[in-house]
Image (cartoon, rainbow, N blue to C red):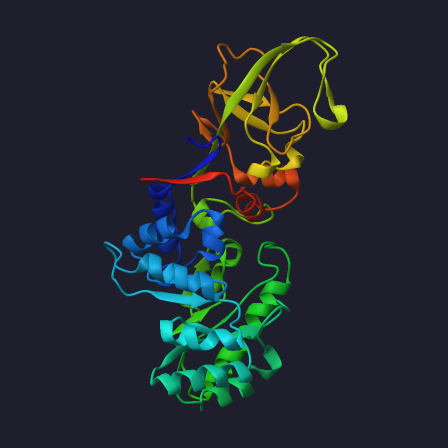
Length: 379
């Protein structure tokens, strides 16, 4: 059966965004972050489109995602055929053997983890690619900056490891005015300089994610030669930072009208009766609610497109339905298409717009699309 709510993913726009990012950071290379099933949108279509466009590095959060992504890239038509799938967060002891066997690039977050990866690689007579994950201020995972050189020295002695990379992550890069990121960059540079003085070299050095690419361009220049991007691939940005990248939204969320009614003045709408009509109005009930990803924060504030017009949401959003004022929109009837976010002529509503109303960021909006929302790739 046709789903009532769909999100369309414009793969051509996705590829255009990837190429714009790649051109912006050149000669640095782009690692595309497709964790959480490409933020819940379907990793297979994303991975194949990006691989065909020339991406050779992909990042995920955990082993199941790594295996799924490698499967999506297998026998991919087009592209180079040589791809690195990298876990960017952590790998647990019982997960290590299978990840080494699968050829996943693994993070070294401490010496015990490195020893387990080494042991598994030696047992399988393989060489495991690893990247040192340094905690220069994120405070979440990794080797503490003060311990970085000592740990790296011990890990480099272990057999079966290709210590090809080193990376860190920024907690404040969304704010170009905050001084913390500048201090963090300087700290990471000092560690890299000392590593170079000791004769250590790394094929891949990365610090910038989407926020840093836009707000701290130095993180895409030497000694850094890789950047990571996720949300910018979707054409979205953190609301606090700059928008240096000229990317476009790739997502359109659609539903359909369930019913249209003429309601009298004084009628109230939805739970809590948060909206009272001060004049007769034509009201459409649309087949999407917060279970589908419409934030409650859109209540009495958000808009959707119906009949080519921007129409205001009135009344509290329910789990399955939302009421919209369509007074003045001619011919609206049950079954008509509704664009919740996306483009309508020269106008548009984006996940960033919803995020601003909710007081959050676009990641939250995209990852909140419900399980009954059909994901459809459009080429």
